Length: 101
Image (cartoon, rainbow, N blue to C red; front, side, top):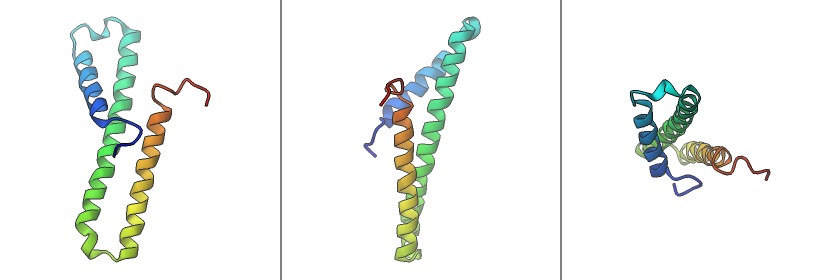
């Protein structure tokens, strides 16, 4: 998926945030720690959802021969719509979310 968000960049962000969270003095600045933790949870949810959708695509490909064409197409479209929804949500909650479009 080469859509509206960069998965590898998001994974790098998660690693960075995990490193920040694991620092000994992380909670010394409670407000900053809270913001970092929220950002981490948000990024992790996006990646988890992304992985679940692509696992679904992989499973669907494996089951292709066992499904009718209509069943396959229906399931594929469901997953595709979820991916588009995720891209849209990610874009709207990203760096441009403060703009009134």
